[in-house]
Picture (cartoon, rainbow, N blue to C red):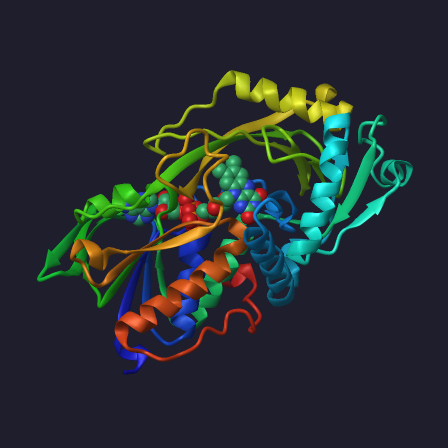
Amino acid sequence: MTAVSKHVVVIGGGVTGAATAYDLSLRGFRVTLLERGSIGAGTSGRTHGLLHSGCRYVADTEVARECYLENQTLRRIAPFLFEKNGGLFVAITEDDLAYKDFFLKKCGEAGIPVEEVEPAAALKMEPNLNPKLKAAVLVPDGTFDPLKVILSFLASAKRCGAVVKPYNEVVGFRVEGGEVRAVRVLDKVSLREYELEADFFVNATGAWANKVASLAGLHVPVKPSPGVMVALDGRIGNRVFNRLNKPGDGDIIIHQRGTSVIGTTSWIVEDPDGVSIPKEHVELMIKRGSEIAPVVSRMRVKAVYVSSRPLVGQAAQTGREVSRSFAIIDHSREGVGNMLSIIGGKFVTARLMAEKMGDAVCERLGVSVPSRTAELPLAPYWLYFS
Ligand SMILES: Cc1cc2nc3c(=O)[nH]c(=O)nc-3n(C[C@H](O)[C@H](O)[C@H](O)COP(=O)(O)OP(=O)(O)OC[C@H]3O[C@@H](n4cnc5c(N)ncnc54)[C@H](O)[C@@H]3O)c2cc1C
C-alpha cells in the first residue's frame, strides 16, 4: 500500500497538529489540516516558549530524557528557531539547597549535561538574580517564539503537499459502519458548512480533544490544566531562571524577545474555553518571581495570559500530579477504527509525538514508510506564507 493514495485529516493547528501534518505529508500521505481559529490559537500560541532541557522534569527520568533528546533534535533540524541562551537552576533558600543533590543525581540519570557554578559566577552571568542565592546549576535550556516553530512545521508540511485550513472548525462527524467517513466543517470566513471525506482522522486538538471526540460519540481522557503567565515589560536576563525545587507555582522566568515571562500555576478545569485569570495567581507569580529576581517587583506588567495543558489523566487534583508524557488514544476500542487522538506532552516533544502518531497511522493503513522528521531540516517559518 502506498501512502499517496490515502487522505488523512488532522484536526487542530497547534504544534502537535502541525508536526503531525508534517510527519504524515513527508511520508507521502495526502494531508488536510483543519484549525478552528488562527494557527496556534490554542495552547501552543500561549506557552512560556521554553525549549526544555528536561531538568524541570527530572523526577521522571523518561520524561526528562525525552525532553532533552527532543531539545537536541530541534536545535539540529531548525537552529534558526531557537535562542540558545541556556538556563540556570538557582537555590534561594535552604529548602532549595536540600533539593540540589537529588537534582544533580537525576540529571545524570537522564543523561542531561549540567554544570554547577559558584553563586558569584552565576550573579556575574545574570546580575538580576537574587544576590542571596546559595547555589546555581547551568542547564541546556533555550527559548523560542512559539508561532514561528508552528509555522515552520506547517511550511514544511505544505512543501510536501499538505493543505492547511485555519478558521475551519470541525462541528461534526459522519460515522458509518465503524468508521468515520467524513468530518463536517464550518468555514468561518464564508460561514458555509461542508463535508470533508478522508481515509483516516487524527484528533490533535489538545485540551479540546474530548470536546471534539465527543462529536463522534468518542471519549478522550484529557485533563485541561490551565496555567497563568505574566509577561514583564522588558527583559531582565538571558538564561532561563528556574528555581531549584520540585516544579511549583511561579518558579520559572523565561526571557525571550523583548520580555521576561514568569510562569506558572496549574489547576484542572472541565472546559478549556473561557478560562478566566485568577487575580491571586498574578500576585503569586510576581511574589514568587521576585524571590528569584528582586527586580521583578519593580517591573511594569505588559501582559497576563492563560492557556491549558492537555494533560493525560483520570484522577488529577491540581494538574501537577498528572503525567507530562503523552498518549495516543485508540478509538477502535469504542468501535471506530480509523481515528486516533493524541494528548499530553509538551511543545518541545511535539515532533516526537507526531512521529509516534505517524507510525500508528501507517500501521492502521498498512503503509510502511519511516519517519524522517528527525533528520531533515525544517523549512523557514516565512515560507508558510508563500
Ligand atoms: C501555561 C503553559 C506554559 C507552557 N509552557 C511550555 C513551554 O515553555 N515549553 C513547552 O515545551 N511546553 C509548554 N507548555 C505545554 C505546551 O504548550 C502544550 O503541551 C502544547 O502547546 C499543546 O499543543 P497542542 O497542539 O496539543 O494543543 P493546542 O496548541 O491547544 O492545539 C489544539 C488546537 O485545536 C484547535 N481546535 C479545537 N477545537 C477544534 C475544532 N472543533 N476544529 C478545529 N480545530 C479545533 C484549537 O483552536 C487549537 O489551536 C505549556 C503549557 C501551558 C499551559
